[in-house]
Each structure stands twice: as structure tokens, then as C-alpha cells.
Length: 335
Image (spheres, rainbow, N blue to C red):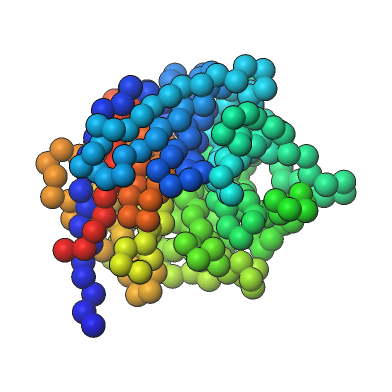
């Protein structure tokens, strides 16, 4: 049976502008996204409001999308930049990030949002705990949160992988990922929750690319697939997993291809291409989008799959060093 090529359709949501970058975004249930934290100005975290978006059932009905900003006061996690979040069993979890005068990583407390309030999740007595960090990544699978990589308080970077069991409340350090330590990488679980996929990042000198690294959850082991044809090296990009016609794909898009010469105070060279990785064939193809009206190049954005075939992106940083506040839906289907 011949395989059909994927096509994308973009639609901008008519929602209140939310200019922000280095935010977290997660989808606790189909059609809902939670945005938290981030910055409007470099090194200045925004307030700890929860931004809730309830999405339309189809791209054609995007006028029905609803946005709500909610403040939970002192029960919310403190303001932060470069945190990581993931959703499991209808709840959103946020870990670490950086803030304060010295802009150092915050502790590794797990903050849980159940849709109505925030709670701290304490690890079980005797559990090890990962080091605080920022610009790390987190995804959820098989009743666990998986936390990976990021920037350390001393300016170094990590390549470790940790799992937090949401039932036993214990952290466990897993096999280190291959390659260099990095921040701004991308990590996502497969729809079957058996594997994690990592792409890209920044090692302190340059953007990383050319491989898809795959973690087998049951075997606690990594393998890598090298490629010559596919997305160019990048960091702070968007990575989501979708399912179209019973097949699983990764959607990898946007990101920074060349860092700013003034570090976090500025903007580097950003991308706007979109690539599809077929998990069955282990091959890349660039996504064709028929719309002339598309999101501009950006990095440090929020992106999440909010349905099997639909990706939401929000905000990010533009090449003119301004925070973007737009909301877009990418609908995927076969040609």
C-alpha cells in the first residue's frame, strides 16, 4: 500500500494577544491548552497567571476558541522563565526554571495544576531529586514525568534523564542521553508511550542537529538515527507528536538556527520551516502548507498537540527581538 504525503493547513485564532516567550504549554485534555510563565522582557518573568485556551472542534470553526486568564494568587508557583511542563491524567505539572536578580535556576519542586488550583507534589522520603535547571524539557508517559537536559546554575548544561513516578512519588535517574550536554532541546513521548524522542538543542557554542535520539522506556536505553536530509540544526524549537490515519509522526518546526551575539538579551536567526518525521519509516519530509497566511519565523515559543491531528503554537521571540503574542492551529491531513 502506497503511503500518502501529509499536508498542513494553518489558521490564526482570533484570541487576545499574549506576547510572551520561554513559556510552558501543555494539553491536559483534548482541545484544551494551559500556558504558564515566560517573559515579555529579557530576564523579567511575567506574573504567575494561568492562561487557558479551549479550542474549536475544527480549524474551520476557529472563531469558537475561548481564552481565559486566571490568577491563583499566592498558591501559584513563583514567576519564572525557561521552566518545563507536561500533562498527565488531566493535570499539568511544572518544574524549575530561572528567576531572581541573578537569574538563577529555581528549586526542583513539582507544581501540579488540576484545573482549579495549584499544589506542590513532595517526593517520597529518601527519593533522589534532579538538580534545579532552566531551558530543560519535560514530557509525560506511562504514569511518569520525564525530565531532561537544561542549563545549570553554574553556567554548564546537562544531558541527564530523570523519571518521576506519579504513583509512588519517587524520582529515578535513568540512562544519560547520547551526545553533548545541552539546553533548549526538544523531547516528546510517542502516542503509545513506549519511547521518547529528542532532537536539537544548544551546547553553549552552537546549535545541534543531524540526529534523532530515541529512548526506549522499558529498556532504559538510547539509540540514535542520523540523517543528512531533514531539518537543519536548531534549538528552542517546537516538537509535537501526532497521529494521522493510524500512523505516528513527529512535527518539528521553527527554532533558532544561530544564537544572538548578546546572549539572552537579543534574538538570533530564527526559522519557520516545518518538518515531519515518520516514525515507521524513520524518514524526514518537509511539510507542504497551502496557506499563504502562516506564522512568522520564531523561537522560544510554546507548542503542543491538542488533538491527534492538530498542533497549537503560541507566541515566541521574533528576529527583531520582540515577543509575539499570536495563536495558531496547524491541521494535518493526507493529500
